Length: 381
Image (cartoon, rainbow, N blue to C red; front, side, top):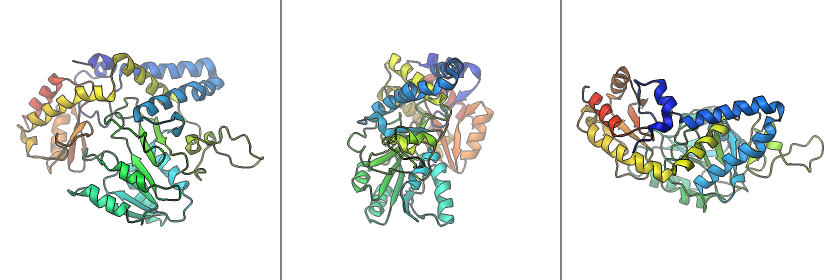
């Protein structure tokens, strides 16, 4: 079955392009255009009062979609921000420690990797990283997490570079305490690509993700699930975090009692509109994360098998099909990775590169003809 009809605007905008970076910049479905229009129309119609609609209707609707996807007990544990970096900075500011000891993997996304390295360089944190390129990474990471040497533990649910899944989140959650350590899971490459159930972990862990990838909502709509008893008063704070704190004396800095205590300041709400519109589309189509995986997984299997017959078969596949669940891309490690990406680009194929790893991502807008076309191009390398 083909779902290309849901992406007619993006596909029609560049008909000669073969886009295989759904894991990076997911093509926007037509529904997101409708959401963007609705945001503009509300701004024009309501002017100053658009924020009443955004905060009373649009924001709660988006919270509800995310809570349902993650099986959270309450939507009010979700707060939004333009990017996950902003939320990471706010989490650290809420810890109340002069120089927190931070444990992470060496495979975290740039937003955390760069910021944590700079914090360490400036003496703001003590940073320890565990190498991901080892057979027993999860065991090694858990051993360090259990050591009691960390105030903050950060790890990706699905590694953005390799597509491998960290499957010990429940064990990390068991270590978390309001007084420390805190556990932060970067779920960006898992959200709406892997079925996630946080119902039994929601009171212990922070979970970060956003709309740019598999949620198909574009940039500017990232979110944090914040466990209720962790971080009541972030130092890095914006005026949206003051909502509902009505018992304050003049001059006091108040915070919302729910996850909005981690909110920032004025933001562009159009991403929330797009997220809601895409979720409505998925509901109309009867598509859940499991349903999208049922479409994508056979395509990934075909892609891996057919690429194995080309020169790309010489690469080391970091996330073979036997590793499930995983993100929706193949990670091919090779010294030829950049040359292959350049060759694909010359043929009108969009892939992406992380060091010497070529990532080829599949989405709802692909079908078997696209896989065949890509592999025919690869066979010419």
